[in-house]
Image (cartoon, rainbow, N blue to C red; front, top):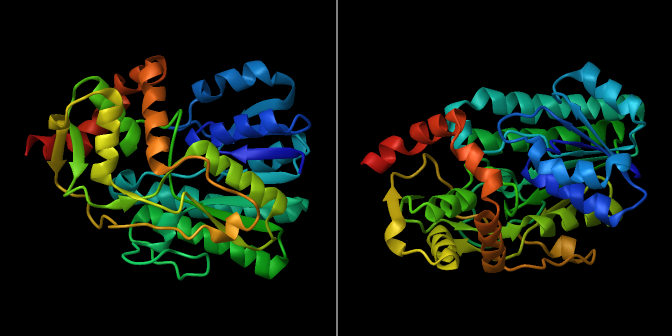
Length: 341
């Protein structure tokens, strides 16, 4: 596994993974294949292109475009696909579920077909803890049934099942990782931690869904990237691995950490109408990955604090996004009525 195609590599987790891998493995070559939707931005890879130009290439393309996928794999003699490409935001999936099905299910099928046709060495699917559905007690293990409750999590579950089916039917060398909520640099500010951090910096209300007692495992993105690296190099073919801190915080606790890190008052918290079907709790059992020698380097609180500081120090990255018409219209649709009420 020395010539990787990272689909969705201009997005949040994907761009951090590309940077991590190129820094760690000096013999690796990575081609980023990305559609450059609203959340996929070349700015996320600006330093990568400058630092690793001889070991990095970018191709703009849709994973649903079978011809372009195959042509890219052949052109760069790729032996491994790591698939981050996905529509990922639950709120958006409630607005427009069709695009999630297209990318997360059909796009996965296209990549699997290319893997089979070209006989690639490895295919890795980056998935989510949300496929397990809400977990009110205990922790999700990799063999648990999938019980998705949003169009987003249902589309990711569909992709996972397609990956496993190709392994069983044709022996494709696949692995799957299911990560908890990621936070860190370059996360589009529709997601809750960068949204709350950037709003707080500007003394704007933080729209907290419901009572804020929903629980999430917030992991630092580079811990997740390291976990995927371990799965790629030590994981067993055909297996699934959970990646997270193994602990969780309530969203209200997360919000208070954001405000405390920035020295902002809790009066900025504004409880708003909850999201439809909002899962109450996710919790992962990560012992299977730990058995391969991986360990999370950050607690949930440390991950949030480090992320908030990055947004405070990198306004050049997020201010153009939040001042743009596309983001402003999304924010109006999602929060305008809620905040007014």
